[in-house]
Length: 116
Image (cartoon, rainbow, N blue to C red; front, side, top):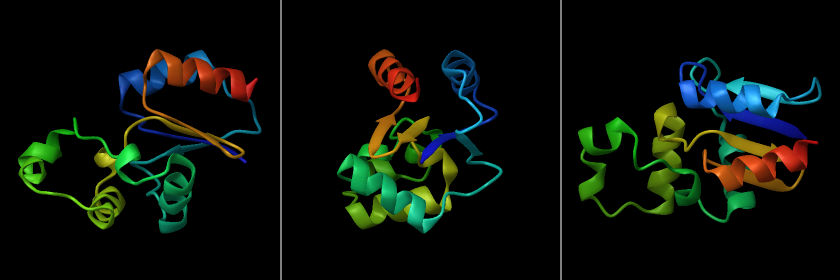
């Protein structure tokens, strides 16, 4: 399975998608239009090792909701990602049993190699 979770209104995600140039065998899921399912977030956790790894602490709502002042658990990270798409660190790229998270140069170059 090859899937890219991204935000269509995010310029960084748009630039990365253009750079990756995914083929027709790659599923593209705009997380604003199509919510992340429980199965998908659990798959991400299984591949990444934790929900915290795929959680974005730079999302504006993180501070706005006061989450930065709380001691969040894995259960909390999962819950917040499922209810608010902006809490997913983007993009998340899954290629078979590998996961690439975020927009760092290394994550994107590794994902590009895996997709090739």
